[in-house]
Image (cartoon, rainbow, N blue to C red):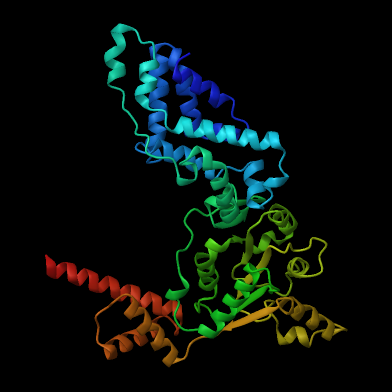
Length: 420
């Protein structure tokens, strides 16, 4: 039996990492190995199909890296146990199967295209076609599988620090169609790029750090004027602490009734999750806020210890109120008011982001200009920034960011024109 056919049989026998065979590129590779004893049309079709899929992944020069990275992000009984630091509880036959699978996958990643071609029993009149087939390059396996004898320990360590499956590959998610779906390109904003509001932001950071360390922490409401950096603060937390096991799942307000389904999927995972509800507000006749109250406290579905709820709102009490409602025909007006206010009270931490005054706005503008290394006279910078704010309806950090972006674009275009 030649090397290629033996490799196909080994690939077919994968057990713990068997789900890898469902991935299109890996499945195409398996079909190619099995085509080694098939007619020329079948063989070259399988070859072309695999190579085209590999090119689409920009991995024609790194087949070993592609295959072994898939190992890192596979969700299976071993990766889940390792992520929870519970591999000692797995039966010995399971651990032996893991070791065998890892050895097979590493060997497959290093199988060279010339070896497959030499194993193909080609008809003499078609040899020139086979010779002209494109070749991929193997590259190197990821460091966790670089050495066969250390692969099990290295992978266990990877899963323990990065989680398993979807949560090892991605850090931002959204709850959609009753499932957790990844956000491949989350906002890359950092805490250092956010100007001013240091006291407010530090309160949120301290609460998040306590959460990551397993210390008592609170659900958090970030409220205040529009454009003051409430949502940006939450997004920046993810970029700062993803390496420490923090993940964010954004949950639309209209899906709060599905909270038990979400926490059921998260409760057993070894990572820490912020459940993010952005721009939260309710009208007075919108009774869905009762669902959020149950989520925060009082519902049968207890919030797991590895989750916190962070919400942003332009309203301190979230639910819109009016004087007419307070003087209406409700017999127990005070009870109605208390019910409305009780929602915001269930956030243990409430942080106010109010609209900046002129001095604070100018500080933000100057900080952003320095960060972008823009060359402009200070008086002119602040004068133009104020004009920009007036045209946009008022000062805010968002307005400052937009002004600096416009100024940077203007200077870049001017510089390009001079160069030409």
